[in-house]
Length: 302
Image (tube, rainbow, N blue to C red; front, side):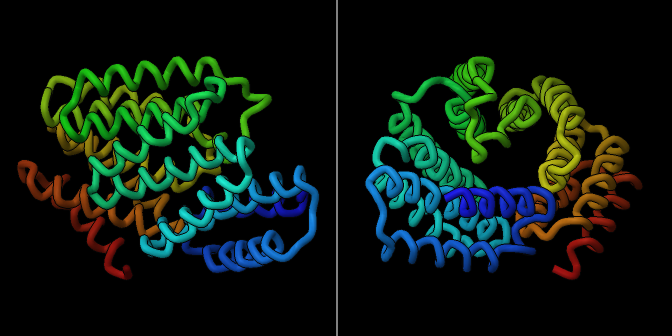
């Protein structure tokens, strides 16, 4: 069990630093091996619950890496496999089960299925309602807020953001599982900033607050979270575009493209395409034209 958990942690670190494309096939192979072990091995009930939790955690990493690589149907397969393992773990699997639902909801958001994402995250909140407040509740409330923001439910967005902040304040870092550790104060602030950016589509005066929150999050982001830092800069560039600040958008786009060179992530490319579309719709300036040219050059090999 200790070796399985250590392997899962190692793959999770690789995913955060280099993206899902580099190690996806390796983690899928490891998942197949551990799944076979769970299916054919002999163990006590207690060890069995822990083993199925380990399968669920490994499946969450395999599914997320696969989603990051753009193979969304396969990603969903691995995430659902993890959910089944979490169910077999009984009450011990409630937390990781909630995280897997979170992954499915984030995938739905990425694919533009916001209402599906909201239903998934609300189901995850109900399924984990008996767990103590902490990072899982914080990340689920934060994702709920983002879905509400996209749908234009600004009062609900504000409520869910406040609930996420309170749950994060109630978290005990000593008991935070590895799969939830990524949702720290930096992640919360950036997500809250993205919510404000989405809200600015309905209330334009909120874009300044979006920029402030994203900047606060990026300042605290751990350096080894390279893919997250690339997403941060793209989100910040999009907020600057919405605020009519082409030079600031160009600077943050440059930073995002530099970070992109260190990772293999289809999702980062997808976000850059969204940024390019927003730049195309913005008033034409030399800074905007240069940013679009650099984005096109970076995406050409893909």
